[in-house]
Each structure stands twice: as C-alpha cells, then as structure tokens.
Amino acid sequence: MGKPNIRTVIAFVVLATFFISCDRNVVFDEDRRVDEKGWHVSDALVFNYEATDTSNTFLCCIDLRNTIDYPFSNIYFSLKTIFPDGSVAADTNLHFILTEKDGRPLGRQNGRYIDGRYPFCYFHFPQQGVYQFVVEHAMRDTVLIGIKEVGISIVKIDN
Image (cartoon, rainbow, N blue to C red; front, side, top):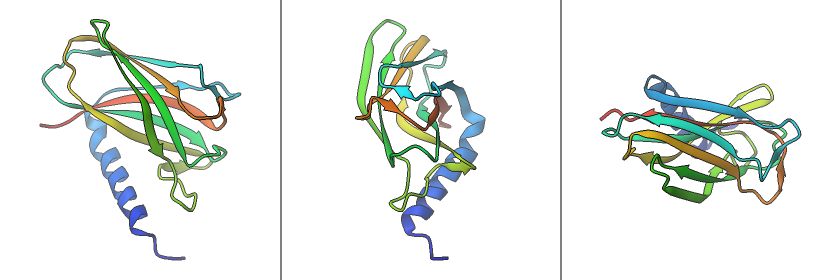
C-alpha cells in the first residue's frame, strides 16, 4: 500500500473537519431524491429556506449522494436563488471535483454510495423571508446516471 498523496490528505482533513464542526450549526438541510432512471437536465430541484437571521454569515452547500456507477469525476450545477422580494441571482457554472485523479472518491463512501457536501458560497441573507434555491445539473449528458440525491444545506458560521 503506497503513501497517500498530499492532495488526498488535505482533502480528507478539510472534509472531516467540515463535517465534524458544522453539524451543530446547520440551520437547513434538505435533500431531494432523483428519478431512478436518471436526473434529466430539465428536472429542477427546488428548496425553500425561511431566513429569519439577517445579521450572521452562512455557508451554503450542495449535498450530493451518488453511486460508484456515476461515470464522471466531476459535476456542474446551475443554481438560481430567488430572494423574498422576487429578485433573482444565478450561478450557471458551479463545478465540483468528486474524485481523485486515480478515481477514488473525495466524499464519504459507504458501500456503493458516496456522500459529499460541497460549499458554494458564503452568504449573508439580506432579507427575512423565503429564499428559493433551484438546482439543475449542467453536464453535457442530458440524463445523469448514478445521482441518487441532491440537497442544500446552510450552515451558520460562528462569528
């Protein structure tokens, strides 16, 4: 058994620290199951978060559960955020690396499933009310095989 490379060690430490330290500060954590036949590019997943805290900073993450059958080492998402006042912010190029160069997963693997939490922004909710997050995949294939669940989690950052 060879020595793990530095990227693997750093990724493991960062993910472990993140999962251990963030659980107590999670204010929102919701997942949606993806169709067993695959996640079609037009199948938007919608998450509603009721923001009441406008004074703190939060870390927003996409949670992903995929199987070992997922054929790619990365994933692209398109994310639209609809604010309580109806204004919209969009990020059409969220990109996450899911595996090492040798194919080993960066997330937590349990049998055939791999769970990962991928931070995409620090956010200060400027308005109280319901924020809607609309998530779509932005991969070239119109149907993604091997994606089981996609979620949004919001973690309060200790100031």
